[in-house]
Length: 196
Length: 196
DNA sequence: CTAGGGTGTTACCGGTCTGTAACTTCCAGA
DNA sequence: TCTGGAAGTTACAGACCGGTAACACCCTAG
Image (cartoon, rainbow over all chains, first blue to last red; front, side, top):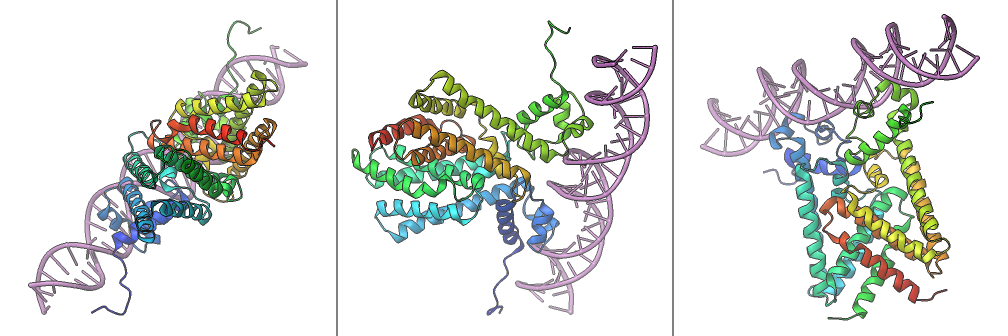
């Protein structure tokens, strides 16, 4: 019986969580496996028992990020069941909150900027996961009864993506401050025109 | 008299040009100074006679990029003298062309993603140069007689920035294909509302 | 012709990186 | 209590990194 005390996560999970955090903060090439394992309270050998290479660890981190993002979408549905328009507005608010969370952009985009080898295993999963997110936003727009749902979803996607890199280059006081206004304006405009 | 043959650029310029190209293609941390000098047809010692460190070389590369971008703006003015609206549309076309040029995003944004140390010398110039570009786009929108010029300029900025990272993650067939339509639609919309 | 600065060459330094080998320690389950 | 597997430890291999020292070369300005 080990009740009463908080179970310390297994080494694999500690490594994964620590790596996610450090990759996010310092970039992928800016962090070595030694630093990860030390911060995770373990050692390099244990890392290589659970992940066959740093590249595989990177991929697993990206997948974990995507899983967390997926949970976010589910939270929208749980908060506003059936009300797709409210969920869309929740997405806008959540996106805006992320902009001010820290000065680092999207982990997928940052990884894509760093890992330039065209056949790097991470590039495949980045594309996969980004496309999945796009599909989810398109569906949300369509189910909200918006005509030209793809165009609105793509526009919102690009705005958000751009806002995240803008925060990374000029900080939170730049163009990204207008993100909510832009997004809400677009939604109104798309709802007004041809509610097909 | 060395007429008749093309003057080979001096080592410093060859290094700068080669570094710009390699940083763009492979990322900053993905390229070592040895590789740069070898590709530039010179050697490491010569590099360190002209640049006091790799960091300074990075900064000079970013400045060179900005200078090239500045020349682009001047080309718009030369092509459509006085016609600010035509220059704005030229910007949209040029931006779209960049999206399909190669799969790599903005060098400034990529550098910001890689160089995470908050006091890295490159971060200062990135912020400077991005703010200068934004100011230029705002001025163009304002001079084109558009009300809410800042909002339009910021929206176009974020769209373009987002399109560049989108190209880097999902390729040229993703949301970025809609960039021109989005941008032109926004310009029309902003011109329609309150030509203050 | 000569002097000197820009350039090329080679070797090296200390550090860091990913990844591995060999061995010990710990702990849960039978 | 015994056993087997997971985890920790130490040391190392081989490569690459940014940066420097010492020296040979070449070309041009005087």
